[in-house]
Length: 247
Image (cartoon, rainbow, N blue to C red):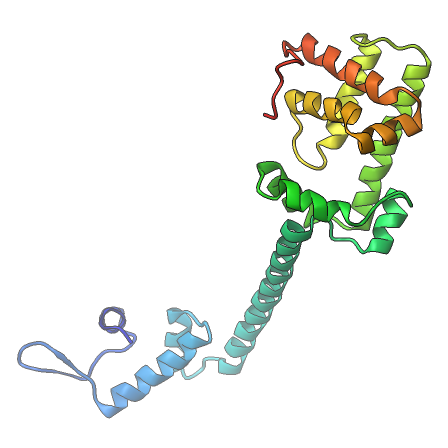
């Protein structure tokens, strides 16, 4: 108990001391202390002061009913806290692992060429960046269906890129620029991708052996063509691809 609480309960008439000293100090009798004990018990289980007053002072008060109602509220709060705990565990796992899917789920969603060690490598390389934190926050709330939808959307974009290159679509054309924007929108499912970042990614698609092999495996020369349409789109938005930085 705090002195402040005792003073407040005295002021509102919930627990007034029976006696006072000549100097004005409160003196609590054994009967007063019993009432205080009851107030503390009911406060500990979460009842409000008005509810406690009714229980202690109203002979017609439905005490079991009030306690049952409080129990229902407590059960709801416990359930909510358990949900928050589960969400917190997923957030921690997402920051540490990146992808909250089993190896089997990853293979089923991203294809047999997918390596389950890639998210771990990405965590080691980019774990201290704002983009990793943004990615982890989104990954924490995603399950297999959400990841499948993202994977399907990216596959559609890659198919459209290959078809556009086959059709002779030129960098800087409305069709090419629309594909660049489409790619940026889908990629932003991982973290917000600016146009400058997209330029950096396009360069990596062309120069990194693994990325280049992947895109050129879809269509010979696709990695370079993809980089070119990203560069052309960036220029149209006042960005010099040669000086673009990760920002």
